[in-house]
Image (tube, rainbow, N blue to C red):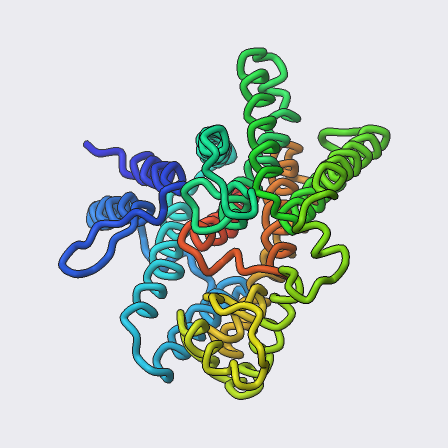
Length: 414
């Protein structure tokens, strides 16, 4: 007989393994089905089978008074309402499916299997593996000279920043694995981890994505500070912080002669920051005109272009998102979605923080919680200057991190 729970976990692992090619899709009866969605679709069928055999009891474990659950519902229904009251778009409907329905289903399925910390660490190892392999593959693109016009590495991604978004969590995952006592006694695996970390750092450097460099350093600092009791002494924490400063300073030194750095340092009116500043101004005016329901999922580009008359001349014409996660959520999910977004974030961090300070939680779980908080912190930091959620792989990662944290908290309560 099919072991339903392990099979569902395997499907979720397969979805994570496909994150690097999340843009690939099949058209089934006119509906696009992305690679990362296919294992979740199969897992849903397995869940229905388990439900029929009374292995699962849907909705029985959901507490609708929980702030986290309320936040998710507000975020989701805010996006649905924004989509409904604005001009209809098949593209927007597909985005609702890909950014909300399937990742939420994957998160739900993961929690329904009642995973323990070993199950979670297996998924984290798969995630590290796919980021490390992607880093190595992107270095092949670099060796072949396949770079953007300004010499940045983007590999098969639409932009260097998108590649950097995907690789960045791998650095934290590699550092977490290297600090684990499990790998300390396995020299081959430890060597493999160091090589993976080197490939990830090199590929990240070659993307020349400054915001991701800053975000990764900040997230690593969060991890070291939160996990210092389990992994490092205070001297080790200081040494780690100095190492981060040294690495970041080296990146800046190596980059200081580039045109991009000079443009940013001199606040050139054609710099990427100046372009983003104009996009933020346009986004703010759009919000002022649509404060309650936003403009709907996937409609920022066309709305942004319509507002060109207010900001002549436009420095950036291609702007599918407003280069700020919080502005994007307000625009695409309305005020209801924005409130839900902040509520679920606050509730999630509160749960993980209480888990770290509980007396009955073991040190291994506390260390994993420090990693998850650092990973989520990375995305929130990147969200200040970009939109790491409104993209297929990023949306799945966002919901996976939330689900991993809730699953870890539930395990500690069992």
